[in-house]
Length: 548
Image (cartoon, rainbow, N blue to C red; front, top):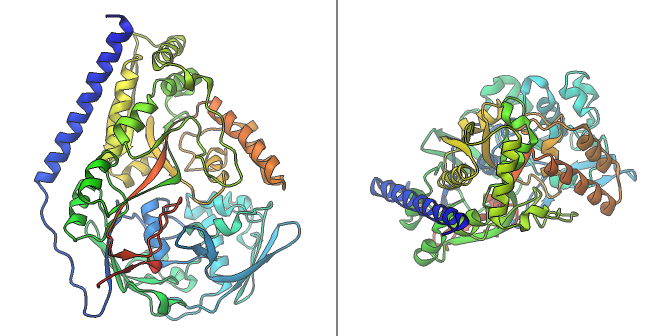
């Protein structure tokens, strides 16, 4: 048997071991499940029991950063635009808008609407929210999105007064936004929670405590009723919502379902009407047992590895980062571990994003995997690592069955090229807090598009992005390309500039793309109004439950 054949055989056994470990874990979980009861629903009402992956850490639109938080906040709050059933941007608080010829001034006309406490929603609430998110004291992760407003970066850096921000209330129902550069995708951006208004009269009274039940005031289809940490978060239809007559569901309980297999069984028993995800490699079993519930759809999202280039010395060497990327067997991870249609990723921006052509895969992507491993060993040796001095580091991952499988696969792949990685899993909130604080060495993470434009991916790596540039990539040439793209009005030329920027970032190996995500959900056939879409956005105001 050749050395190559022996290596391949070892890989096969290691990977078979992964599957056995995963199955054993699943069986252990299933054996311990209790049987929670479905809460009673008042006669004549429609209630929705909603599995939502993880516990929100906040319901404040200006400080949230996680997808599962956005699910709830997007049902409580509404921005200038909002999500249609298919995920596209449609009028929300704004009924119409116009743009100046140079694309820099947008004037939004607001509908007559009220907060859930009866106070009017005004243009001033939007101005207050935008000044608040850019206030350095808020320390908002998503401040960089709102920094497209004139003087936004200066305000966020504490170098300009909030009053200089390009957001003005011309009157109670007319909002004027002045931008630093043309942003043709602003209607897409405006439906993101960072652009939501907040009730100034409530926030000024309660400060950070305004998001507690009994204080929370919303302008969307629902209002917050109660929040039992670790159990459920309950909302009820907001009778003051401008379109309340068209909202079917009267009450929603959102459950943190970190244990996806337990959630799957709760859906099967009718305790949950839906769950926003399921364990990817169980798709075959689920199609056989819950076929009418399984929903999958390609999405604008990428799973990738981030390397802490600021605080972990080995990852300052580009040869080390390239070696680790070369050694990842993306085809095995997608085809054998995930198995739900995920596509191996060799670039960061996913296919299907608007006004963009995907970056070509690197030449090494076509090489046999053994050749890629050999090149990875060579690069590690050139960086000073080998049998006598193996590269050692930690993978810090959010706690989920999928990330556990990915982490174990990475460990096996990297061990074969002489790198020893330990795996540490934390609850999602703890893991992301660690990424923000740069308390990690390497991590698998997913990024879902905040809006349908390649900049939602590429802006993560700007030097001034802040917390979400987790690996602290800093390249003035990259920043200059993104700035040039901002100034380019021609869509085709802009796409080429952004393509050059992405290629530069990939050549620097600041990240290692792994695969393009497939949305996965379990949805009862009794639910109507659920439309599979590329952003995996499903506002509850469009949903109903037949027979309830």
